[in-house]
Length: 150
Image 1 (cartoon, rainbow, N blue to C red):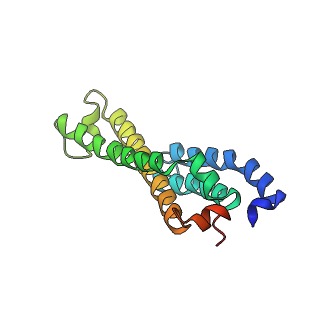
Image 2 (cartoon, rainbow, N blue to C red):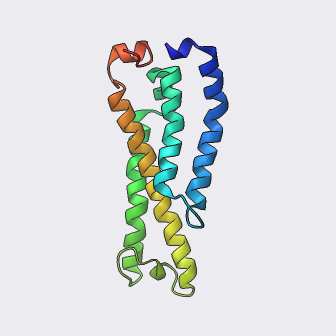
C-alpha cells in the first residue's frame, strides 16, 4: 500500500503545491504561448490524483469532496457559456470576444480568451477528478480502506 511508504508520502506532500502552481502557470500563460485550459486542467487534476493514489480515497475526499468537485464542473461550464451569452447580449456572435469590449476589441479578445480558458481549465480538472473517483472505486468500501489498491 502506497500510503504506508514514507518516500511516497513525503514526495507527494512536497510536489502537490508545485504541480498545482505549474498548472496555474500553464493556465494563465496559455494565451501567450503553449498551454491553456485543457492542459492546465489535466496538470492540476494530476496533483489531486497523485494525492489520492498515495493517501487513499478517504483522504482525497476530505481534501476535495466529490460534491464540491461536481459544483466546480458546473461552474466551469457556466463560465465558458457565460462568455458566449455576454457576447450575444453585447450584440456580437456567440463567443465573439470583440463584443466584450466595444471601446478596445483587443482587450475584449484578451478577456474572452482568459475567461474561456479558465472555464475549460476548471471543467477539465473537475471531470478528470470525477473520472478518478469513479474508476478508483468511489463508494466502494474496500477502496476506501486500502487506498484504492483493491
